[in-house]
Length: 564
Ligand code: ATP
Ligand code: MG
Ligand code: MG
Ligand code: MG
Image 1 (spheres, protein in one colour):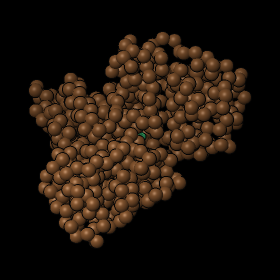
Image 2 (cartoon, rainbow, N blue to C red):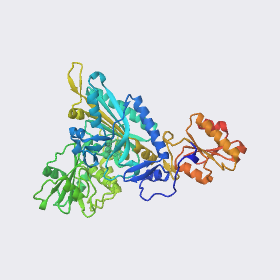
Image 3 (tube, rainbow, N blue to C red):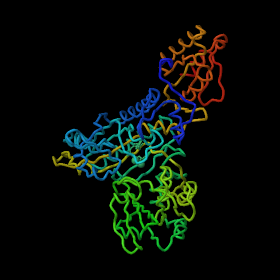
Image 4 (cartoon, rainbow, N blue to C red):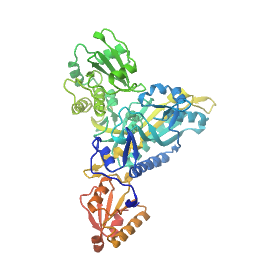
C-alpha cells in the first residue's frame, strides 16, 4: 500500500466527547467515524485492524475444530417466542416490522437461529459433537452506548454454538474453546484473565468471561495472587467464605428507621434471595423501594414497590419503574438527579459497589446516594477492596486482589435450556430421541480493537501489538518528489519487504518529516524506516521501533534482519 493512494485522515485534536483513550485515539487516527449513537463506520485504516483480529479469531476457531457458517442478522419473532426471549430479552432487542407487518428483530445473539438450524440438520448422535461459528454483525440497543466501538449498538461478534449428546461431551468442547480463547488473546498480544462468571441473561450452568485488564474497564474482577482463581466481583463476593465483612455493618449504621434491609425488601417483594442472587434496595424520597436482583433472571430485573408510610406496597409494572428512573423497561436505567435515592446494601457490598461504579461510568446520576458519606468512584473502589481484597481466595490459596477489566470474550455451558425449549433432539445409539446439550462462545471482535489500545498507547498515539497493526512497517520517504534516488531506494526496499511477506506501507505522501512521523506514531505502526538522501550517502536507513526511545542507523542487511 502507498499512503499517497490510501485514505488516511488523522487529527491532532482530542475529540471532546471521547472519554477514554481508545475512543480518542481511534478517532484521531481516523479508524472510525460516528454515524449515530453506537453506530460507527470503520474507515479503510480501521478495517485493516479489525480484519487482522478477525483473521486470528478465525484461524484459532478453525484450529479448534469449529466450522464456520453465516446466519442472517434479521431474525423472525416466532423463533424468539419459542424460548420466551421475545419478551424477556428486554430493551436491547431491536424489534422491526416488514411491509407485511411481520415482526423481526435485529439479532443481538443467535441461540434461537442456530438451535433451529440444528433441529433441522442434526438427526443422529453420530453427527455430534459439532461446533458451528460465525463472525457477524450484532445489534443491541444498549441503553447508553459509549466509548466508541467498546460499547456500540452495532458491533462485530464471533459467536460459536456447540451441540452434544451429553454433558461430558459439552464439558470437553467447553475446555477446548476455553483454551482456544486463551490462545487467541495471547496471540493478539493482550494481557488478559479468564474469570468465573454469572450465567446471567444467556442462562446455563458454567461460564467464564475473558477480560482484558485495563483501568478503564467497566467490570471489576477479583483474582488470587496465589493460584489461578479468578472471578468477576459478584461471583467472588457470592463465593467468598465466612461472615459478611465489616463494611456491611457500616452501611447498616446509615439506615434510617424508614429504610429496610435487602432481606426485608426481598421478603416484601417476594423475591427469593439465593447465593447467586444479589439484591440491592434503593429507597427514594417519594417512598419508592427498588430492589435490584441479579442472577438466575433473564436480565437484571428491577421491581418497585410503593410504600406509603411503609405500611402498604405493591409491585409496580416495568413501565412505572422505567418512568420513575427515566429509563427503558427491562433494563436498569439512569436515575434522574431530581429523584435522589438512598442506597442500602445490606447483603452484598461488592455487588452494590459494582452497580454504583457501573452507574457512574454509564453517566447515570445517583444523586444523594448515601453510603455514610458522599459517594465517589474512588471511595467505592476502596470499599470493594475492603470487602473483597484481602479475603482469602475461595480456593484457599493466596489472597484476593482486584483489577478492572474489559469483557472481550464469554463462554457458556448452556446445557439443554434452548434445545429443550425448541425441541432440538437427535437419536441416540438405542434409537431414542435425546434433547441435545449446548454450549455457546462469544468474542467481541470489534471491542478487542478498542481494548487493545487501552493497553497499548503512549503520548504520541497507539502502539499496536504487532499482530493487530494496520501495517507492520512504514517506509517513510523524505522528499520523494525532489530526490529520485531516494524514491527509487524506498520503492525497492518496500517491494523487497512485501516480497518477503512483511506487511509494509510506503509513506510517499511527500509530507514534512515531522508530520509524517507524527502520523506513523499516532496510527501505531510498530516499525518505522526512514529513507533519506543523507542516509543513502552513508549507506544506511534510519530504523525505529514504535516504543523505542531512539532511532538507529542500519545498513540494508541489518535492517532486513531486524524486520524479519
Ligand atoms: P457486556 O457485559 O459488556 O454488556 P455482554 O456480557 O452483554 O457484554 P455477551 O452476550 O457475553 O456480552 O457477548 C459476547 C461478547 O460480545 C462480549 O464478551 C463482548 O466482548 C462483546 N460485546 C457485547 N456487547 C457489546 C457491545 N455493546 N459493543 C461491543 N462489543 C460487545
Ligand atoms: Mg451486555
Ligand atoms: Mg457481561
Ligand atoms: Mg457476557
